[in-house]
Image (cartoon, rainbow, N blue to C red; front, side):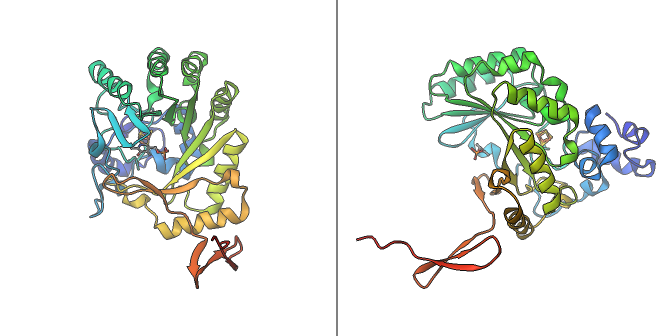
Length: 338
Ligand SMILES: *Cc1c(COP(=O)(O)O)cnc(C)c1O
Ligand code: SF4
């Protein structure tokens, strides 16, 4: 996909083309036909995939590796930051390139993890019994062929201590045709495969995306979602309410709302943490707990993910002060223990 394609598809004005060419030298462009159509009808979708001149702006806080993937890599392609789970970066390719991506410096570089590195990563997992969960990511793991996924998931199933395999992917939403019978069969090579769908706006939920998610749910694959809080895309309680309600209808449990990372050239997408907390507090007042994700920050530098949602609890005069969903304060005392 080129800047000229964006202009001829009506996604970018011709006058912007020279600046967008500069953006395209730094960061990849890619949209699927489904997201091209959705972008034409929705600002909230377009801003995620269509480059703008704002990406040329670098801010002092921008970082090349905002979440510190490289600081916990025992072997290439593997991130082991928490004791019981690892991230396996099986490819650097994606079906779409998101303008705010926290791995935007590395996605799109080459194809799949080379076979020798994959073997080394599997050997590390097999020899580290503390690892109970393997998270496949990238890039997007579901750009791999069903045959490769079946092989990989089958090999992980053969390692006794790997209780579950989790895939983090945008594919069911942005390239729903890929979720076909052979892919579903590939996922079944391990008895406990979970899929976490990355989606940021209800306008991404085309009928094809809804059907793809239903195929996974019907196959018994538990579905979670992760969303990035993005200024100008979904930074309002109404927009996120529509998304989370759409997900629940499709049997997807909202899991994480990520505070936007410090990726280079993505400063225009960042909100403040206070803005995110206000949105989460508003949602708690109006939605079922099943709809509410945990609002998290990946602490820059590779120090881990922590919840940063609104707090309802404070200590006062030797007791707790609790805020209810309507903002009223209540006193709660722990029972005395002898
Ligand atoms: C986010 C992340 C995980 C997964 O964390 P969960 O809280 O289990 O979803 C695992 N490893 C790394 C390095 C991560 O950044
Ligand atoms: S699909 Fe994920 S990894 Fe790929 S560009 Fe988008 S956010 Fe980044």
